[in-house]
Length: 114
Length: 109
Image (cartoon, rainbow over all chains, first blue to last red; front, side, top):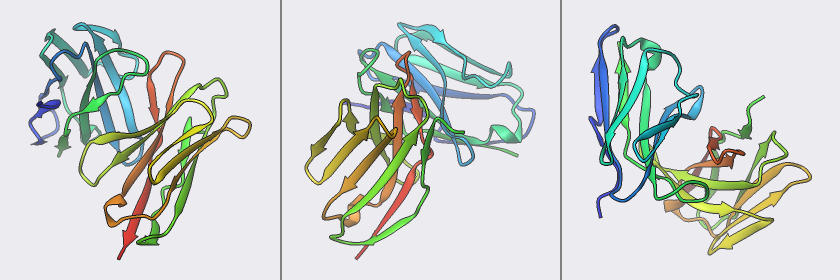
């Protein structure tokens, strides 16, 4: 079975550019999460969806960040405009249900903003 | 103060050693905890769940001390393949996962 798929795996861009990260959750999982990992702040939840509907976006750092889930098999995280402090590894995860259901992480997108 | 605090390490131990690391949390209402393992430049993966006082899975034992608000992970007979970063995770009241920054373990031959 394919796990969570993320693309691109690496992204290098210049400050001010738009960045779009993509995620395909595990088939049948109805929860999708976006996390960000940095050395300073560790792994932080940005936003999560249930059945394609955003439930909690309290972790989104600011208006430059937006996330969508147009269907059950695809989600995007967009940063516009990007800044050097956005440099991090962005993980997407999915789970079969809420609460104690295990979250399965994708391989991550390593973003560098110059 | 961070919600979940861990010693960043690294813990450098010889193969076959027993190693333990602790994680402290600040929210006394927390009910559930987890240990995730993250290899270098890889994604986190669930290692163990800690629902009550603790549990054991082969060489790994996790314990929860609610009075002192800490969770421990004990690894016996450590293997080279145990080298990784171990993330302590608290589940908050809305079932969101709060991650610690991780403890790095290096097992040497």
